[in-house]
Length: 162
Image 1 (cartoon, rainbow, N blue to C red):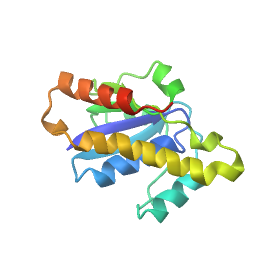
Image 2: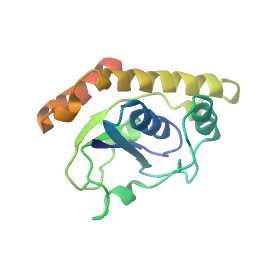
Image 3: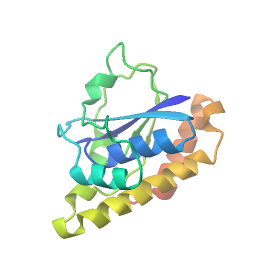
């Protein structure tokens, strides 16, 4: 099982969604975590509503700092995926294990007008699921570092909407 860290600035929406998708839909091939460079301190309520509606367990969902995953006792990450442009452009901490990095940009559903929030979250979820499903088609857990990097980056390039 590979460990993936999903990063976004606020860690309240996109990163939370992809963390759940990767962990719960990968057939135990991935254990995903999420974090933010400047976490909001709360998961966006619509993230919880959508994930629960889709049958995900959200009992442990929380907004957290990426500093948790740069600590010496943090799980060793195999890959770090950014889902927002600002997190992709930031200088990240040094992660234990020196994971590969890729960007899977998705528009921020939390920035949608109130009347469109539900639809924006659904759209983000579908986009992130499309990225994840593309990955699941590969035997990525058998890949060397370079092949994993190339695969994750290619998925990001081919499916990015941001």
